[in-house]
Structures are given as C-alpha cells and as structure tokens.
Image (cartoon, rainbow, N blue to C red; front, side, top):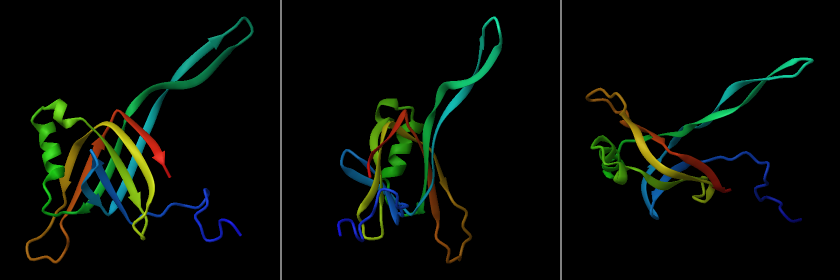
Length: 152
C-alpha cells in the first residue's frame, strides 16, 4: 500500500538537530529551537455608513521575524564572527541570506526555512560554575527581513 510507513503531510515533525547554512556552508548546528516568531501587528479600522459603525481589525505592520536557537558551546568561531560584524557596524557583511534546516534523528532534512537579510542580534553564553560537569550553552537570536518555509 503506497505511503505505508512514510511520513504523511499531517504527521507532526520531530527534529533532532538544527543548522544554519550560509552560501552552502553550515556555520553552526544547534540542539534546540526555542522559537520562530513571525508577527503582524493588528490595527483598528472603523468603517461607517448612514446606518451603522463597524469596527474591524486589519493586518498592520510586520515585525521582523526572529529565530532563537540553543546549543552546547563549542570552539567554532563562525557564529561569533558573524555577530562581530554586527557589533562592528558592518551592515553589508552582517546581513546574510541563509537557511535554517531541521533534521530528524536519521539525519534527513524535515523542514527548511529561507531567511533573507538575516543577522545575529543577540548571543548569550549560559551560566556555568567552575568545576561543574555541566555543558556550557550558547543561544543566538537571529533577526531577518523575511522568513519563508521553502521545503518540507
């Protein structure tokens, strides 16, 4: 029977890891996606006629989409170098078009998003005590002009 055992369109997506790819090069892998936020601010609109006044909510301005990712801190410098270009005010180098790819436990992509003119707005290194066996964590908030789901 076709489709038996295969993922169906209504199946929930599970992801084991996430990556950011720029110019075909994976610059960072993450173990946690804490959120993708895309939002349009509603505006009030009043329409009136001789008989009545109607209040409506209409789509207003879009807020820039944000993506928050988290991982165990490693020695890779690519993510920090990208953020450093933002800190240095180098807008041309900082704004990159990139992909966010979600992989299942078998390592196959299950979802892909294209981020236009993205840049890391915030990098946060988690707290850690000396002598602890805990993993040092790093989280990044990426802002972009446009976010588009491009593949399942």
